Image (tube, rainbow, N blue to C red; front, top):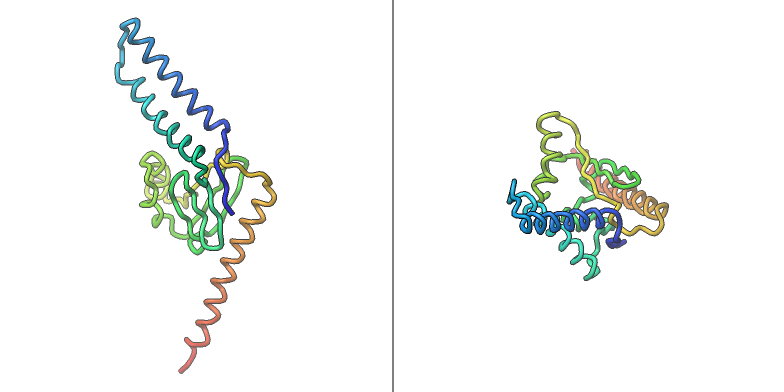
Length: 176
């Protein structure tokens, strides 16, 4: 199943921050008032990057989330979570939390260094099993109940496939 981006509060937050930073840049240069001349241009670049990335995926109708029998693909963060590696998936109102058997394996797959800081701190300093998360507030999901049933069905199918592989291997290991 494929899900696409929506214009929601995340988009408007990015747009608002971008506009505020542009207004401050113009105001500072008109009044020749420069306390931190690099601060607002940096903020504008950061939020401008996220705004362009979001608009590109929205305008060209790129899928934000793909769920099938093999994996969950988060195209916003460019991470593919395989069902064989997933221990538990918990859905809240705004996030899909994914608990993995081996979370260290997925640290290198997070391209954004800012998003990588939380899992690294949680894993290495606090020795906690950290959830990876997918923000559902930017994804257009028409029926939440159907979405949860889809996640549940694919996770059960993945477990059944793993159990059947184990059952096939057992008779051959007991041969003397």
